[in-house]
Length: 210
Image (tube, one colour):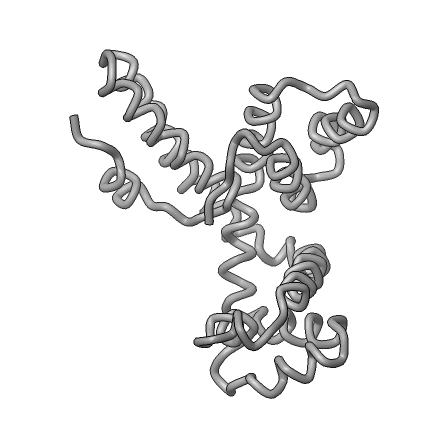
């Protein structure tokens, strides 16, 4: 998956998708961005990128903890909510494809699924799934707190590593500097906007070697 940092709507969508992982009192700076957009006094693109990355970083630990839960213990909760709230034809299709050892991801990753469902059905599943995640997270966030704290420690290590790499990039010149800074920005996009799990070892392997 790729996110274009020039696409304002994609940035706004990525921010909106993570706000439920923030305490209500911490959401205002990000909600103000939506208000400014509606009132046609939008923030600059650079500000929007910065705020989107900030929202993503603040919520990354909780999102990682939730992802671990919803792909293991919470898998059946997700399945039940999604199949209950999608349209009847889509629910019937999903139930036909269900296996004993797999959840929604397993069904959606089956070969040929993109040809078996219309794009609007896949979009419907994704929208219902996002709402299901919101409900499941609200019901289980206290239980997930220990894992969230572990992920916060993991994130601190990642951010310190990225900071050192940026400092190193600024000692370079020309194409070497540009390539490293671009690569670091793409890593941040994958981590904070797309919510990927990227350990330091993998990040190091993906950075250009001067």
